[in-house]
Image 1: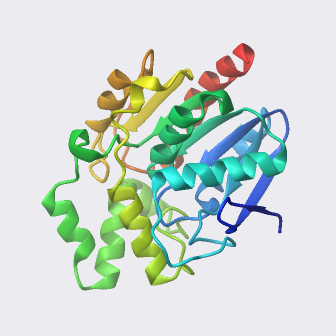
Image 2 (image 1 turned 60 degrees about the horizontal axis):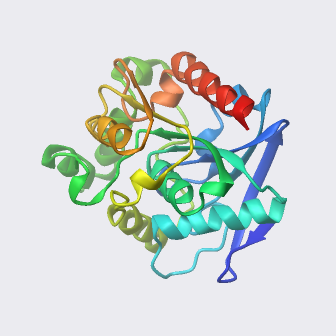
Amino acid sequence: MPFATAVDGVKLSYQVRGGGQPLVLLQGQANEHRWWDPVRPDFEQEFRTITFDYRGTGGSDKPDEPYTTRGFAADVLAVLDELGVEKAHVYGTSMGGRVAQWLAADHPERVGSLVLGCSSPGGAHGIERDNDVRRSLAQPDRAAAERALLELMYTPAWLATHPGPHRTVGDPAMPAYARRRHLAASAGHDSWAALPSITAPTLVVHGTDDVFNPAANAPLLADRIPGAELRMIEGARHAYFEEFRQVASPLVLDFLLGGASRT
């Protein structure tokens, strides 16, 4: 298993597949790279896909110390440096979209095209999930809470025919302290002031029925990032990229291929 070393010495497990121009895939909060397993093959014919396990997840080190989305972006750079990649296209979903925002804002020379899926600017300008959603996830019955999370990710029709395992509901081997650190990192994200400095061609994608990370965040991002395109996927919830794969993957791939031709 290959590792990159972050600036603070943390070992970061990474994975590379496919060929072509590099494409970094960034997953959601408290998840490791297997988040991308269902759809990663869609991109491997055209791109060299690069994933890594955030600190606290998967095969990476799990220090019990504060994490931030900006710090995760620095970890992405450590992986790219290890691979000798000077510039990559970046597709981040959920918290991965928050990480991608910092990567594009802080290091514009390292990002080709940018795709932000089911993400948010966070902070005072971001639209938070409502209290009913919060309560459904915090209920003491663990099985009920896990079911509530699945129903925020996927439609009932999808769940009825796809019993799992579902790769988007968290790394099961993740220590509890690291899960809390991830939650704090995502909750502390606020990129509003930095978004106008993003120069990479940007596509914002979101499901219209996403209440986990409310769909109203998508136009906020698209309006704040110069020249960004916005695409809403009708009827999709948070895991739009998996359930609505036949719509989402071609949409993202077409955008990225346009970016690849510009690079």
